[in-house]
Image: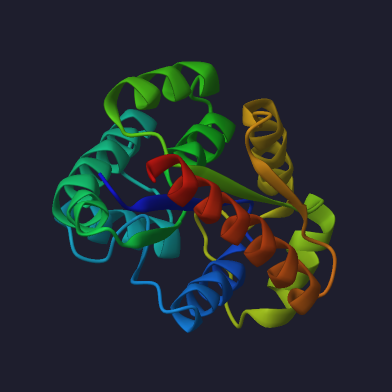
Length: 207
């Protein structure tokens, strides 16, 4: 695959969705073909069900069923969207990937390490993971101020603290770890500089 797979991760309120869009805009401004996507998807049957769970709560859905929905949605996502975009040579910018499942469903009681191992065995590795590190208290403050209605499934301070702990257990030395407490423009500039450097290094390796 000649494309580049970039994943944004972080707890709710970390600013990752905003930064993913800003990076996509910066890449397109450089003339690069960008495929912007996110998980759970909005198009697969499993993705649609997961979005409903996030909005309205998981009543009647077991943790095991929820995890299976995430895996089913991810299989669809890779096969139908991510892999074709990478084969075209696009830069894929993805808001959340399997690390989110390991962190969030781990915070609900699943084994984070086991979910990570299963995911690594089943799904392609991204070229870059951008992790927006923001303390849960700061993230929850942002959510409370900026959203008219919190998602019943996930957006609670105590839960975000658990998710944050699991994200921290997943961090690898290869990740691009960003202090997400700063201003949007400063963060975006740091991310863009790092990504452009990595893309340049990849081009040199292929030449």
